[in-house]
Length: 293
Image (cartoon, rainbow, N blue to C red):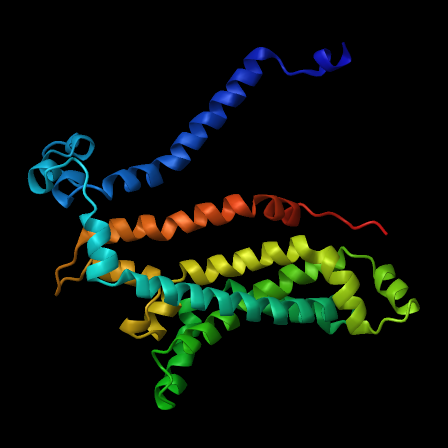
């Protein structure tokens, strides 16, 4: 009886469900519409005369004999070799995440266990640098990279992305480490562990939700970056986002919009899979409270 009394009124529940469904439709619509349009020709998907052509695919049928075509994907992946950019992107993301988490976990743990006053000011300084637009930081790297003939290579972009991402990683992991009682370290030391062994065998297993959450944000930074990779990487080393922009062309060169549409779908799909796969770790990492000993 008590559980029934505590239930929300039927009207409120229907309104809540309706809002959630409407929000999901609105949130998913851009991706669904882009996915649908990626199998059309440009004159259908961007039709000015009749927007229903994007649904029916009249011109697509006239051109390819079917209402759907994979010409956009073929042009992006085969003709323009988008697969190279996919490989470059995952190489950049892998090394950015590994480097950022390695430095961030060590630094965040050291700062969380330090009692010195400089820790606060160091974190504030890190936060200020993280708040600065990446484009303002990239310009400072260009002169030495050109002088030392380092411009255009993947390691160059990885170094800069790590430098830009490290303050955020350090700040976030420091916050997670602070929620772990110092008594865990002391108990491990009593059992004969060194400081590093306590960190490795006791603290890190407790910290996994925070590490995964921080790693995901580091991955998204590198995956979605445009400013750094567009300015520091040569054409053959481009990641996905700058490559998609190149499909659109410029005022001097003609682009292929449907290559870009197909590439956008190809680049977005892995993010959906990643978030769905790690959703529990993301939620637990973002909502982790104090750890009880």
